[in-house]
Structures are given as structure tokens and as C-alpha cells.
Amino acid sequence: KKLKKIDPKKLGSRAITNIKKTMTNGRRKMYKPLPDSLTIKTSKVDGLGLFAKEGIGQGTNLGMSHLKIGEKIIRTPLGGFINHSGDANCVKVELHMTNEKFDYKKWNLVTLQDIKEGEELTVRYTFYNV
Image 1 (cartoon, rainbow, N blue to C red):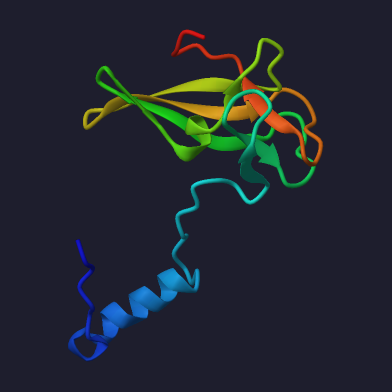
Image 2 (tube, one colour; image 1 turned 90 degrees about the vertical axis):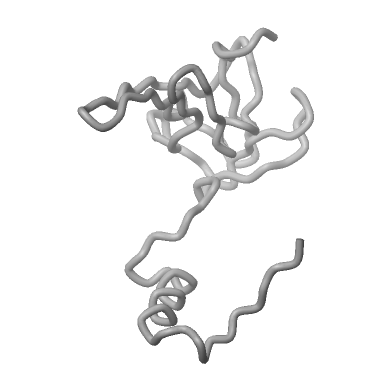
């Protein structure tokens, strides 16, 4: 499916300002599938994996790796590219989010030790059989 071109002349000035703020990282935070300190590369473990672009300290929260709504588990790019290891250097930390409007769980990826530049990040799988 082809994307439809938008004529900027037909957009209001507020819409253009919002687009510029989003594109230039103005006051709005742009979506980033991975933290700046990580990249995806070919893994010796399996397929592709997450690798440190720089040193990362022990206890660093790298962000959400999985989200569970009802019985469905959704992987983020962070959770989709991390490989399993019996000697993992990261752990998934479970957070239960609930109030009158919602009830879900999410898991954040946290480093268990200092990670060296170029090192692959791994976790012990708990959602899948390996």
C-alpha cells in the first residue's frame, strides 16, 4: 500500500508545529525501540541479539521488554532480540500495573552485572521453552 502524501499547505499551523517538535525531539519524547546504549547484531547464541554499544553499569534499567494484557504476552524490540543464557547477565523484573481502568503486567530488563562494550546481553527465558 502506498503512503499518501500530505500537502503541508492543507495542515494547520498547530499541526505543523507538532510535527516539527516530534521530528526534532522538541518537548515531546520520540519513540526509541532500544536505548541508545544498545544495538542489534549477529549473535553467537542464536540469530540476532542485543549488544552493548558502550559500557553499561550493574543495575541499569534498560526499559520494558514484555507486556502482558489478559493472557497475551507482547514483546517489545528489547524483549524480541534478547537471547537466552543459563548464565544470563540481565534479568526481567516484573511490575504489576493496576487501577480501576487497567490491569496488566510488564517486565523491564535490568542488568545483573557490569556489561562491557561489545558484550551480548542475555536473560534466562521464563516465558518460552528452550
